[in-house]
Image 1 (tube, rainbow, N blue to C red):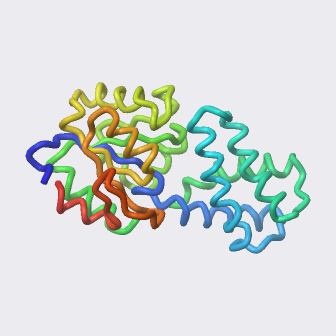
Image 2: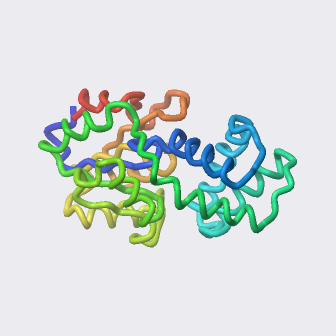
Length: 229
């Protein structure tokens, strides 16, 4: 469908290739026990996961900074669970979370298969709102770093998706026009609408069981990319 048009494919990383929720859960399973936080993991995650999405949106919209993101998502979770956890311990947990997160390397099903399929045919790139040091570790530890020509993140771009500047920077680095570029990601707002605003072709990877829409082609398995590229 797009194979005669597209030359460059841009992927989001978290929730698209790298299974953020699974790796995050394993990280918390480790650090909560090690730091004597007595809470049922499933109860904790039921509150933390939506809180994390809320604070990432605030961070993406530049309403909070990195330190606030890392502290507040944990603080609100413990407050909601009515747990008394000191600020010192919250800050320590936040640091331990970052230190341990990239040690877990679960990818979404068919990630390696689709990258092997695409690599001989297209230039592959990453556009991520994550932090450079953490995202590079994730890519390297998961064994997929070498698939990508360019890795554009919020740290080196100075802007976050859906800001058009980060998408334009990605196009400039790849030396490609938007009409020959495909963006694949899980976030309708950040990945799909952000990229479409500059003229990218898009595939919305539905990692969150969202309702169908007409804003982009939606896929539920990475292997479905083969139908379009």
